[in-house]
Amino acid sequence: MIPVADELKGRDFTRVADWSRDELLQALDLADELKRLQAAREPHTLLPGRTLGMIFQKPSTRTRVSFEVGIYQLGGIGLYLSAGDLQLGRGETVKDTARVLSRYLDAIMIRTFAQGDVEELAEHADIPVINGLTDSSHPCQALADVMTIRERFGRLEGVRVAYLGDGNNVCASLMVACTRLGMSFVAATPKGYEPPPEVVALAREDGEVELTSEPHAAAEGADVLYTDVWTSMGQEEERARRLTDLAGYGIDAELVSAAAPEAIVLHCLPAHYGEEISEDVVYGPQSAVWDEAENRLHAQKALMALTIR
Ligand code: CP
Ligand code: NVA
Image (cartoon, rainbow, N blue to C red; front, side, top):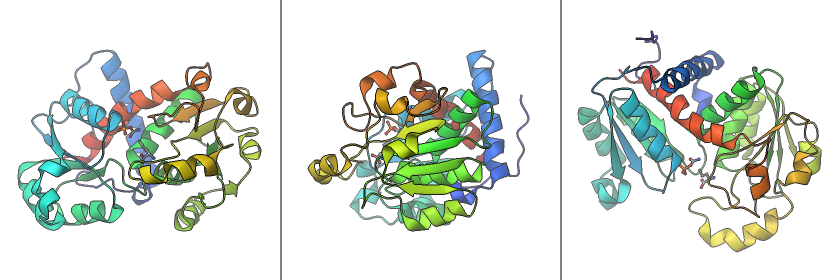
């Protein structure tokens, strides 16, 4: 069995910012190795008999399937817990839920609205808590994204990432991951859709972050073009206004031609074609979105193998 260091055992992954550059690189290296082993159908049951509880308060395709398949491939089992079916949905506290689940499970993955609920769960659980998306962050996505970037370019240092559209949860986690790993980041958003200033300040402690309202200026010479939906889960009532405000910030073939010749296009998915991205770009030669989606599996397996005791 491949050796896995135990220094990260017991650690939570609720925000990218809590992991150092070296710790993130450790996860990326293991993810690459686990991807290779899976492709070769070589067993890598690093977590035999362990159970991952997966609490979902929002829908999911990638996160749910990649975590469930991932823990299974590592020799454990995943338990899908719809938040509405738990007593949590009827008012049982996050603290009590954390204490009880810690007695049954070996780790918890949670997708919910408030980042504070994830932090509270992590504070009171004795087992690792992994954030599977909140309104303000999506750290597992960012890990798979940087894995994909390194896989395509063979390096992270000096890569220029341009994010276009809504400065949302995906943008925030990606920005912190990029600067921590030596990349430069530019976000092109309309006024009122900028990433939160505290996240920008945090990312700027590690590297260069540019903010602009000009999509073309951001795309010019970029190595990576990234976008995400304009209406995130929970914002459905704002959809009409968002469509108007964000018009002009979508990625299409013309914008891709402004980027570096070898540039790749990423999108965390699900995509809304004709809004934040065109279908021909997602299915085009510069798209890396399918590898990016696959890499959720490998990156999260690495996270679990590193943190679960
Ligand atoms: N990218 C992502 O998190 O997808 P799901 O919402 O399908 O999990
Ligand atoms: N920003 C999106 C990401 C979906 C994976 C949302 O929060 O709905």
